[in-house]
Each structure stands twice: as structure tokens, then as C-alpha cells.
Image (tube, rainbow, N blue to C red):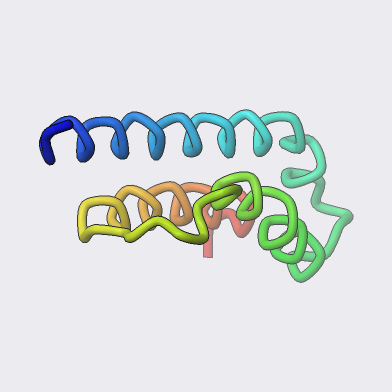
Length: 86
């Protein structure tokens, strides 16, 4: 298998993990947008549920700059939705 194919497979896998993390977030969207729940609890939920979905089975993978950038984009979107306008 060529390096290009390995990189492509890695990108496809990462996109799938990000999609699964978005699905998890949208299932918990009412919780995240509830103004009666503290931001601290919402961030804890993000770290324990949503981020674990994103990184599941990825402990041994090497992240490239592009991978890290995609993960950062996802995290910023979730932070903006949880914290709202600052």
C-alpha cells in the first residue's frame, strides 16, 4: 500500500470520527443550549462525552498538522455553541 493511500485512509477515518462527534453533540444539543445549566458542567460534558467520541481508538495514531487543524476547528465550533456570545 502506498503512502498516499495510507494518508487518504487516515483522512477518511478522521472525517468519520469528526462526523460521529458532531452527531453526539447534536444529540446533546438541548443540554448544551439550556441556560439553566452551568457552563462548567457543559464543558465537562464536552470533555467527557464529545471529545471521547472524537478520539475513540485514535490513541496510537500520529496527528499531522492538517489533522490537528481539523480537530481544532471542530472544538472551536463546539465551544462557541456551548459558551455562546462572550
